[in-house]
Length: 470
Image (cartoon, rainbow, N blue to C red; front, side):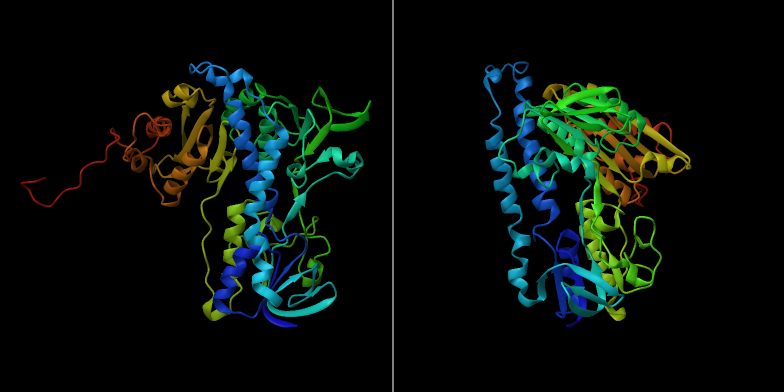
C-alpha cells in the first residue's frame, strides 16, 4: 500500500492529527493497536473526574452540620453504584473515538505498526509506504515487574474503573497528579487509604510554599509516607507496603508512578537517528519532527508535555507540519497549563518556579484560607503565588493550591499568553464576593514589588485629545 500520510495511534494526538491531515489529502491511513477509545476518555481524565465528583459530593456531608443542615451522618457511599456510574459515563465518552474505524472504512487499520525506515512501516506484516508518518502511539502505566505477582490486587487507572467494587484498604504508590487525585477521592468515599512516594513533593508542585500549604490539608484525609521508595510484600493475605518509616496493610495497591511511552518495537532504530538511553529520538518541541525526517512523534509518547490538551495541540501541529511544503504552516505552542483535581485544586501556569530562578522576578502571594468566599463555603484552601518580571511587571506564571484553581489558572493563562502586566490585571473588574478576589490580593502584593504597577488598581484615563474634555 502507498499513501501520502500514515498516522499511527488513534488517541487524542492521532485524531487531532487526522483532522489536519484531511485538510490537504484523503490519501491517508490511520493505524491503531488496541481499543479505539482515547486514554483520556477510556481510562484517564473523564472516568477519574467522574469518580472525583462522587467522592467530593459524599465528603461534603462533613460540612453540612456547620451550615445548619442535619442528617448528613446518615449518608453512605455505595461503591458499586459509584463505579457503575463511572463506567456508564465512560462508555458515553468513548463512543465518538470508537466510531472512527466505521466512518473511515478501509482507511482505518487495526494492528501493530512498526517502522521500517523514514517512509516505510508494516502493520502486522503488511507493508505501507508513506510520504509522511505521524507517530502517536500513546503510553501505558508503569508497573514494576515484581508487583505483577499480586495479580488483580495490583491496580492501575487502566483497570481501576472496571472494578465492580473496591476493597476497604488501598495503598496508592505515586503521589503525582494522578496518584493524589485518586488517593484523596478513594479516601473521601470512605476507604482506608495511604499514599507513598519516593520524593517529598505531591501533585507535581514545584513551589515549596504552595507545597507546604497543601500537604497538611491532604494529610488531614489520608496518611502520606514520602521521601523513600515503597516496598511491597505478601503477608497474611494482605499486601504490606512500607516506605519513609510508614507501614500500611493493604487489600489492593494502586500503582500511579507514571506512564511509559509505547515505543517498544516501534522501529525508531530504523530511522537512522540517535536514540537516548530510553530509546527516544530528539524531537523538536515546536514542530514535533524527528531530526529532519518527514516523521513526527506526538502526544504522551514524546514525553514533552504529557497532558490531554497538549496532545491535541501536538497532533494539530504535526498534522500541519506533515503537509506538503507549499501548504505547511508553523504554529506556536500555548502557555503551559496544568491542573490537578484534588481538593483544593492544584494548578500551574507558565514555567515552574525552579525554571524562573535565574531571572529577576518578583512574586506575589495570597493565603486563600482566610478568603471570604472560601470561609463561607467551608472549603479547604492553601496559597496562590504569582510571578512577574520585576522591571516590566509582565506576568510570567503562577502556582496555586486553592478552590476553583481550574478557573483562576485559565484567567492567569490568558494574561500570560497576552503578555499582560500586573497593572493590566488589576485594572480588570473584580466582583464581590468571589474567589477571584484572592487573585487580586496576590496581584496587589505583587504590585508592590514590580515597576510600572502604579498606585491604583484602576488604569489611568487616556487623553481624549480635546482640552475641554481632558
